[in-house]
View 1: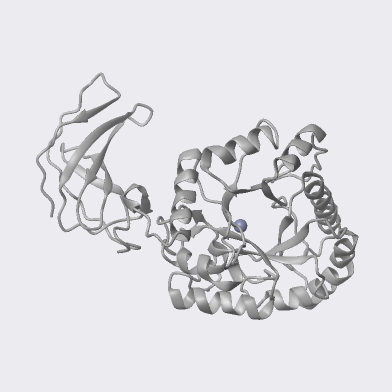
View 2 (view 1 turned 135 degrees about the horizontal axis):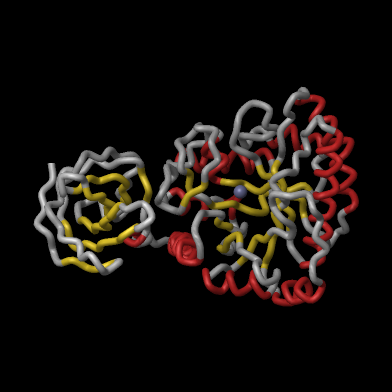
Length: 386
Ligand SMILES: [Zn+2]
């Protein structure tokens, strides 16, 4: 039997790596975790707390470390490169100390230098770092990025010269981010696209895929934009993740979410992946999708809540509607006393996917809003839609 993929997420470590991180992991139902060991937006190399390190290591929870965002191994700036290498070395040591399996690092951008020069730089400066890693130490996991020219790895194919520059060092692994790859043009929204992409990864870097960053994408395939979103809320959709979970290259490889939100959304995203792993299509009526607009043919209001936002002096009604595709829409009161759909949330129902929809104004009729209560349920308003 093929090994199942552990499912988890990037966790907050507020309160300590073990104390905060493991609690967050338990709260969201994570079977593995990814953590930052330093400020992700700074260069400071935090020493860490040996007691917390030991606790995390002894917990036996499968863990990975993500390097800070400033790291750019392709940078032509000697200062940035030195800091990047120092940060990667520090990350590898910290990962080893907490028993993490890998340090995820973005593959970087050549910025103003040529790709050849950047590759030479990887060979001369990064390869020696890989050679320092002890046999029982973490892997360095290369994560391709969405983005424009200059990026050293956007597609799966771009990993080949990068790994070659590192002489296919055994400690050089791959972290595949679904959102980045989709944005770079791998169409992961279809079964064929998933197969083609993961087959290519298998062929180019066999045995090197060690972690999957499982994120839906707010932007379309090929957009070059990197905006992660919750499952079902983006353009990849939910069902392709079932194909990914079943692909041989991903057998036993952890799926780690890096989606927006706190405990509730993270728990829901992990729940979706766990269901897919079981071969079940998740009940997505609770998974909300943000889209810019929605085309609504008929709307039936089930329940209306009133939310007051005093700061903006706008009254926003949250309305659950029922159609075949739309679970809920957010409507705003118009000056005329009607309501306009401003933002919408849609869901997949039984695998039927709404990825891009357009909203027309929808009148939901007059709803009385109690003056003093910040939030209240309002019984069935009469509705009409056009
Ligand atoms: Zn990622």
